[in-house]
Length: 219
Image 1 (cartoon, rainbow, N blue to C red):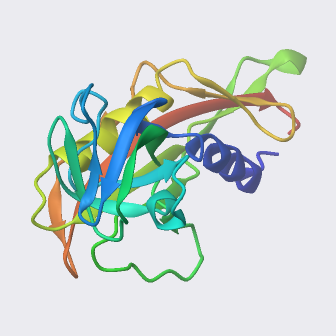
Image 2: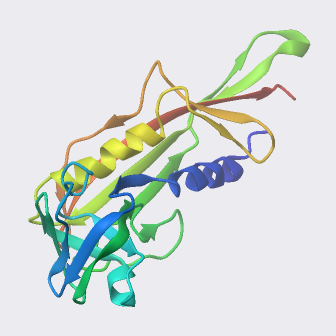
């Protein structure tokens, strides 16, 4: 039997490893309006308006808390909720947004903060081969929808989407709890859909990940 609940949990575990952007360890300062740097580039590191970032290594805990980028240039990143702190060796990263709408779990978005929604489609099942060596093949799809605040442009959502395509690249193998291996398909590779305006002050970009899993035919 195909355990779709176990497959979903394995996909979610992979999703949680997403890294959309990072400065690495470098010299970064903070003011009440955001972060700054004298060398390197926030843009080159992958940061875009609408993304959620988290600092590490700052003395003031507010500078380490998650916050949303409202604008960004090579040397400055504007975010609410920062405190003034002189330059020091720190890291700023953008991972999967902390606000997540998991399947069949009640969720309410927070205005001004990005979030992700997952949808799992079990997909069709077919038998491959004959006799005792026959297998069952299931072709599920993992649909992810990335929401960013409205009126910040498309770059933040697309940066998340591109990072998801890298995370779930064709041929990527994901071990399922039963010991079976789930594979990201390459004949129909993951793809990004059209960005659209969503309700309640958000824009959304869908990412679809086609998958394949084979298991022994017990029928």
